[in-house]
Amino acid sequence: MHRQSMAIDQLVLRPFHTLDKRWMLLTAGTATGSFNPMTISWGALGTVWNKPFAMTLVRPTRHTYGLMDQGHDFTLSVFPEDMKKRVHGVCGTRSGRDLDKVAATGLTAVPSAEVEAPGFDEAELILECRQIYRDDLDPSLFMAPEIHKLYTDDHHRFWFGEVVAVHGTEAWRV
Image 1: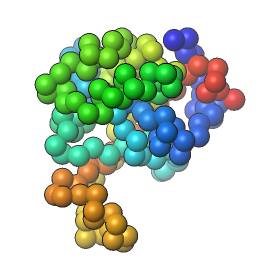
Image 2: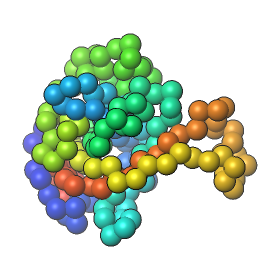
Image 3: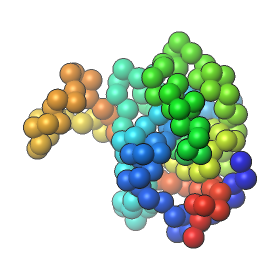
Image 4: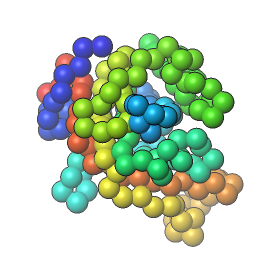
């Protein structure tokens, strides 16, 4: 895929559509060591502490959780819509403990410019993020009763990542 680096303020992104309909691939770990891609459709993108940020949530039962806790960064990748079933069908339903998701999906991991976690050659958009905050969801603070129905006892941990590099095709650029 032909991506170019761009300034964050050049990025054209429909966050609700991208997360809810297109989905993203969260990748934690290191390109030179162990890493794992995981489909996400929950998260946030915006500005916090005067920094562009991405927020992602991972349940403690997921293989990616340990890699996020051990690491300092992560990437978020968006793929062409015709790859959704192949990529997200595997990376959203299978565990990296039991399966090499990169081999199973035919993806090609590529080194990132600013972080240790890799991106993927087939991606249209890659956000490189450096972790700046993490915390655990506290169910006693849920204000909407329906949120409790989404959990048994494995409440998400969430991470804020400062977006330190953006690489995208022309479709993602102002």
